[in-house]
Image 1 (cartoon, rainbow, N blue to C red):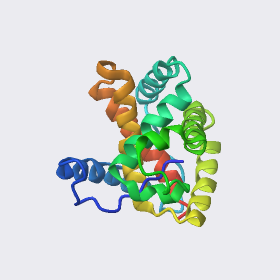
Image 2: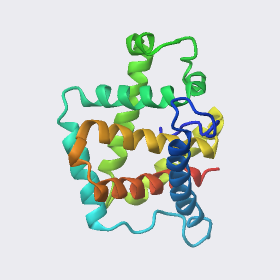
Image 3: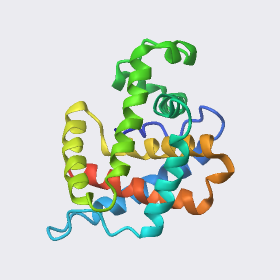
Image 4: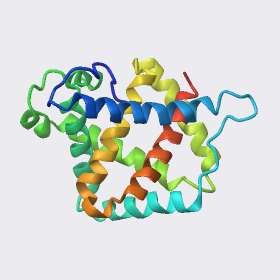
Amino acid sequence: FFFLHVGIVGLSIDGQSSIKQTTANKFLSIIFCAHKSRESPTNTKMKEISYNTISLVLESWEQLRRTPNFEEEAGVVLYKHLFQLHPEVHALFGLDTLDNSEELAKSKRFRMQAKYMIQMLDSSLQMLGPDIELLTEINHDLGKRHVRYGVTPEMYGFMGEAVIYTLDNFLGQDFSKETREAWEQIYGELAGDILSAY
């Protein structure tokens, strides 16, 4: 549920290729570090995450959850942003025949996928803490499925950027630098779990 195609970082779709590249590289670096920490046979699970980091993520997520129909609304914003920056990923979802955002927004399949993504993220976040080992196993299995779907490790960086964009879009000034950094850490760890299957 976290993937996104890193593809053509150097191309400028909106005149901000250097910003996109910096954001993508930052997420890829975070994910790579989380993934590398699991390569040791004695360390195959998420590193310990501070209570403060988890609290910041869960509090901001709870704020987003107060949005009416939040699963679909947040999912639509997330995927529209993703597809705007990387239209080539439409094909991964079978949505490559929908040429513009209006067609996409009306697509029942698109809205279902958008809602499903947010539901999956919500489920993962609810398992932070005592259920972390189960979450690690679930994410590893998810990674195996993503391999079969043709998702490459590079595809996780821009999804992280899309998640952050969505949170920033809905939370505005409440999405502080500290909260953003907490999300980057949690997302990196979750994606690192998924990549353990690659």
